[in-house]
Image (tube, rainbow, N blue to C red; front, side):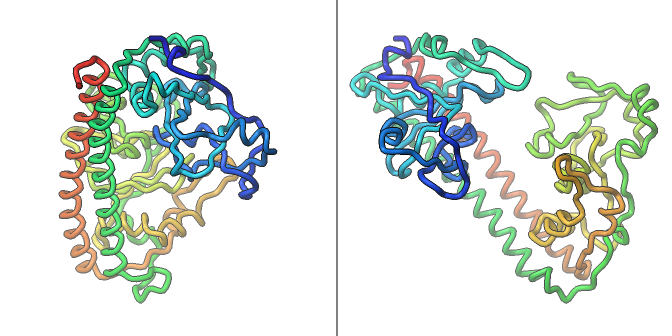
Length: 396
């Protein structure tokens, strides 16, 4: 069947002015369904009269669909259920109302998330400079397999069980992170009221360098070429550190460039701080079994023997650390932080023995998180395989 045959309607949301002052009703935005679910923390508010409220208020089983977005996010969808409370359909998302006598809303929701159908939408969109879009005519033409309602509900039950596993894994990860923070607090206390001596961060740094420490823009351009295909060395960027992914969608440099960028070679264990854009974000570089070099717009920090790099990373990621870094970041639009500002950070420093003890605990926790990460991959693969089987008619 075509998608249009299983829907009562496809409609746009209200264009009424949105506010952040909690005036009126919660209203959806593009960001509301960014992770494939309805995130009520990513809503705003809108004031509506009774007529427009009845027109735009979501009903149980309605599906929100992203038809204006960057291409990679186009076609994302999320299903609304009445337990979420009152929610109004806002602009830049389409609302699908399923014909419940033909298709089970949750089944349609899963179906729209399938890889095949996401590809359908992303390959038929109209692309512009900053965003892509889908017209309703194209959306309605999507062809879908529609088994009996009984079979649809059975498929949904199986997929929901797998999603529960994903939720449990997410909760487990959150508990591990929470425990890690509690260990830091128990060992080092409130750093705003610390008993430890205060150091300038610069006094604890052995090396503070960046990509441009290797030469002028002209010389760097002549000696460094970036490659999308595997080459001699990995060029680590902020996006790789954010995703903790150093394998897919990464950049490489050749051996000449790697040796030329002598001052910004990475060996693992260093602290990396963004210096522009998401200025002040801190990362601990893992040890990778290959040559690695630092990309632009980041500082590379090696510490002296007064401090442990694992301890320092968690200090800088604590509320105290985020606060002192934020105080050094400048710029209203483009955020930046300088080397001198980094050196001037005030660091309460506990004895190295206590730092090392904390680092040993963290290393054990990281092993647990590694097992959890592998489990997450396995659960995701299971879910994707079940999705594929479901919509090929093999999951009955």
